[in-house]
Length: 123
Image 1 (cartoon, one colour):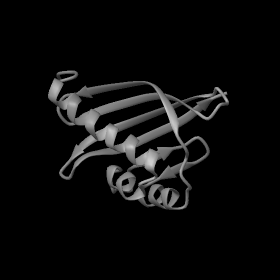
Image 2 (tube, one colour):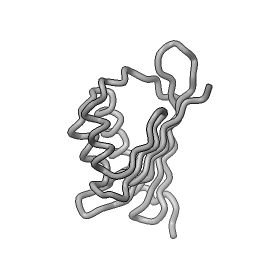
Image 3 (cartoon, helix red, strand yellow):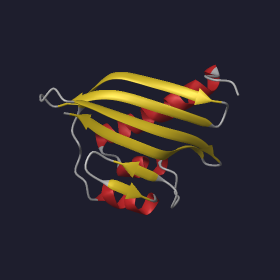
């Protein structure tokens, strides 16, 4: 397995940037598109545990825009040609708390999709 093949890193980085732009704009359609439409998909949020695409989509549709955040660091690592992780450190608002977002991406027939995600905030 080759780690960080440059063109694969570029593909995943582009998908991740698209996700971040959709998050900032609260573009629910794009956020939903970028999660794998499967009962196997999961998202652990700061205040919720969501199992399956339907639960994630329902959460997104009922949520207001999260507001802007300042991204401090992004790490993209690819494993071969079809699997990757993205890890992001951010701050939101003026409270000084550090947030963390981890996503596992897999190449599906329809393109790169998030198959697992985790968001947490350091107190």
